[in-house]
Length: 114
Length: 113
Image (cartoon, rainbow over all chains, first blue to last red; front, side, top):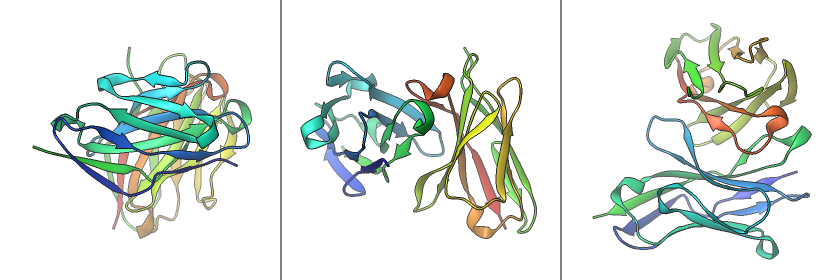
């Protein structure tokens, strides 16, 4: 079984401040990990993914995440928040083969203050 | 290259009716996933189709069903609609057997009145 925990439902930062969105996962086999972003009334857009190899993953819009197996974490960061980053962010885990469905965390709403 | 397309964008139905939602995957993708995003419940996995076969099913009643056509497009049917079925239904596609990432459509907003 696989699961994702995103603590808290809302994060608020000032424009230009560091963004840190936390994600912890549970998986019985090596996971694939993803961060998706959802803007109001839209579908999900892939920000970045970890499958194998380098544990620090860079994505779109200046976001990056680091896979830490020992901590079962995949936290999302961005050095400097922009107003356009305000959205809902979902962490997800999957595997290949028979259990390839994405399992999502509950999501975190990011607000950016001027 | 066209992304995942879903139709209709919005759908309003009466309780007890049936709803049919459609999804066209990215060209070359054979896997289609359906998710329900209801207010306060997050993203719940509904169904996974690959190569025309149902591969996995989430914890939903049998009145949620679907199919995948030879061109890999997919249809989600919801019978005997209940008010609680009101949600955004998202379709995603990926390569064979779910390799790497899934790409999502814009969703169908189903409202049951």
